[in-house]
Each structure stands twice: as structure tokens, then as C-alpha cells.
Image 1 (cartoon, one colour):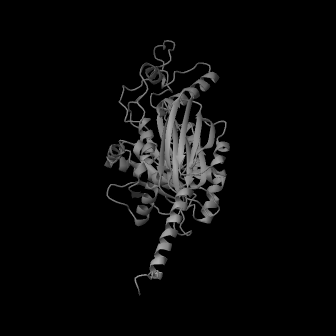
Image 2 (tube, rainbow, N blue to C red):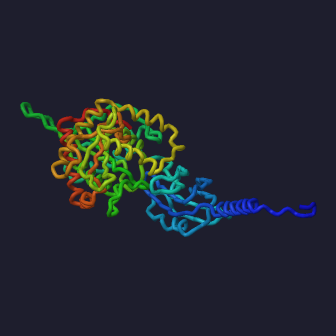
Length: 467
């Protein structure tokens, strides 16, 4: 080769350069394309409304809350406006407690702006969730009221309404056993949001209705009133973004257990034990997600006497069948199946979606809930045994005794707590039963008899209700 000759290009070097250019072009195209919205969902509820935007790639968002008039503006980067995102406008219903309407538009290239016009002042939380289970990347807006709902106040209001209705049909209205508690609530400020353990106050004493003097030798008049309201916390599992298990016919666990919980609530509210009125408190009364620790905190906030979590799980094989009742264990699971189920239920927060950054004291709360006592577990086993005995009268049981495992939702240190698996929704026969309204009634009746049977042998102790 002479000095004036140009060296021939190396085929290998040319291919490398061409490949590098192709990769660079592909990378630019991928960046330009960004993420694609695959679904939008709205979960309205009195406690909070959740808006979820699901995409095939991670999203970045910047938000601005304007208090007057209340609205939340969110700029979502890296996406283009598509039909799936436009559907969000139509998904907001007129009865949504928080959202009045949604506006959406392409604010800039690769930036979509959402504006949520609100019906009331709110405390918005915007966060992202990584892919889990059937979900891809999620961008979540949670809209909480500025003044959180106090579950005890709500419970008192319901009880007062019932008493007023009863008084309207009675000749001589009797005093409400929660009258002093309500009066005390008017004198003190509402609790700080976050549902911390309440500060005890003196017990509520029911005043007797004034009566005419009793003649000498006559028996004293009997009193049917009481100062002890028995509160049963009913916890329908899953909800909202977390559907729970799904049967082969499409039955969702979250829907079935909510219907059973409503039936059980009606039975509890219609029951009086030894003159003590009962009142049910639902950790969720609609289709929305509640984190596990919040379910327990709600029950403790109303000082529930019992905590009953209702589920209908699935197993890896459709052959599994039968109802089960579980209590907490401090030493490990009573069987490998119980351990598997507890691990599965404890993962609900990952699927439902918890704003980790918004729960500053989560480790403190969990430490507090880990202080379950031996007495609480023993009482839970008694409650579970009573319920299992009633379920076994008409339903097949998966096991004949109460099982134990480390369920996070059962860790209230001062409330007897059980988790009831009503059936295996993965079994086609049991799924069909769970869909049957008559069978749902049977389940609610059995759980109510189990509650009554437990209290007949373990009367609720006198305790101070708190505000």
C-alpha cells in the first residue's frame, strides 16, 4: 500500500458504528415515546377519594394545590394525551364526595396537565407505586378531607339517631346511654388526625328516668337501660385497588366479604345482650382501600370489644375447600398453610397501595401493634372457637380447630381479634355458594351466633369510653 492510497474501511468497524447509531436512534425514540397510560380508576368514598393512573412505564409528576376555590393541578411528565386518560373525565360521578370535575389537556410536549376541581378543602397526597401483582406502574392521588372523620363521633351519631327513632315511637323517651359522652364531645376538641391511641376519660353513667315514689313493701322498679355499649368492629378484607382473591367465574373477594359484613352489621345492631345494646363498626363500608394498620387503629379508636376480619381466599389448587378461623400467634404459624395465608394477607398493603412517605410513624405504629398480649390471644381463641362451632353446623370446615399465624390485621393488643375465611373462592362450588344471597345470610347468622356465644361465657368488662 502506498502513501496515496486510502486504507479500506474495516467491515467489523463499520458494523459496530452502524449498530451504535441504530441503538442511539432507538434510545431517542424510546425517550420521545415515554410511558403510555393503560388504565384510569376512581374510588370515591366518604373517608377519601383515590384516583389511580396506571401506565406501562414510571411517571413523574409535579402538583400544586390551590385552596380557593379548592383544586389540585398535576403536571404528568413523559406522556401524551390519549383516549385512556380522557376517560378520567367521565369516570368522576356526581355523588363523589370530593371531586366536582376533572379537566385534562396537553400542557406542553410530553406533559399532560390534570386539574381536579374539588367540592371541599382537602389534603391531597400524590405518590407513585411500582409494579406489583396484576398492576403496572401507578400514579396515585389520594384526596383526604381537611378535617378527618372521627370514627367514634360517627358511631355516636348513629347510636343517637337510633335512640331518637326509638324515642319517637315510645310513650316516655328513655335517656340515651351515650348522652353524657356526646355532651362531653361538645366540650372538647376533636382528636388530632392520625387515629392515635385515645386518652381515657371517666366512664359514662346512664341516668335513670325520674319515677314516682315507690310505696313501702313494693318491689323496686326494674331498669332496662345500661351504660355499656358493646362495640363489634367488622373488617371486610381488601377493597378498592386491592380486589383480593378472584374466583373462576370472576367473583371478587372484596365484593363478597363486604356484603357479608353488611349483613352481620345489621344483625349486631339489632341485638341486645343482657340489656347491653350492641353496635357494629365497619372498617370500610364501601369499595375503597384501607391499609392494614389503619383497620386496627380504627377498631382501637372506637374501643371495640371484638374485631372480626372477613375474607374468602384462594389457594393454588381449586380442590382446597372449607371455612377457617384464625387467631394471632406469637410463636409462629400453627401450620404451613396458615403461614402461607398470613404472608399473603399481609401483602395487601403492597397491592392496595400505601403512601410510605406519608406514614411517618409507621414503624412506631407497627411496634405498638406488635405488643399483643397472651390474654388477648387466649380470648381470640375462645371467640374463634365459638364462631367455628357455628360455621360447622352448615358449612364444611377446612380444619376443626382455630388456627394461628402472624396476621398483621389481628395485632390489636387489647381487642380479641379473629380472621374468618368464609370459604375458598378458588373452589368453583364454594364460589357459587358465596355468590348466593341465602348462603351469605347463613354465614352472617352463624357469625352473629358465634359472637353471642362468646359473650355468654365471657361478658364484656366495664370500661371507659373515650373521645
